[in-house]
Image 1 (spheres, rainbow, N blue to C red):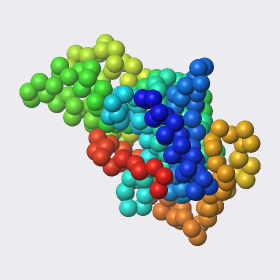
Image 2 (image 1 turned 90 degrees about the vertical axis):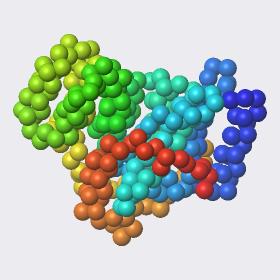
Image 3 (image 1 turned 60 degrees about the horizontal axis):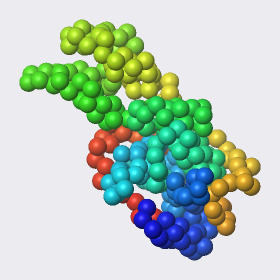
Length: 285
């Protein structure tokens, strides 16, 4: 950030927290006390996550600012399949340490409520941070990111008349049984002579995160659990006067059957993530 920008942003976030005690924000400093990462979540995000935060996505492909720093967004869908935001962050980098701090801060802001499923890109640092902070959360890979990586690493196969992308997509979505998936995957490798391609080998090793037949167990929805009353940490880095958020109840939120439908919709809707215009956020409202 340019001189004065960091101070102005922190001043704005502080004013928002003073005006609305439920507004959450946190900043991480480096060894020279320079701001590296900033996270925030307004009241609407806090309440939305309390009701709709079982299945979420985290994306950092919004490096549209002039500094080309990652802008990360935690998002999901509501009952009408509309995008809802659960939190946002400006990051200095996407190292495992930065992401670990971010996920821990996200949980602190949301009273330690952990998502059951989170979809991200194929970044190893992301997987490492999630394994350390959310070991019990199912980590799925966003199919849009996988397809983009497939084009990046195997774009030379996309010649006229090639069905490479179609077959790759079928391996992700169309096979209910593991045996069918294995047969289709092997056939694709042989047909395009890519049995030793490093990216495909590495992607196959984590097929439980993206292949439909392997993700069934990870997408199972458990019955709603009661909120943890002791979830507030006295040493939390999230700045807030009062972290009280309306408690979710069956009367306030969706019934279990509706929640299951929402989660299933989210799981199948993340393939449409290239339409990123829906993820813009106005903080502090």
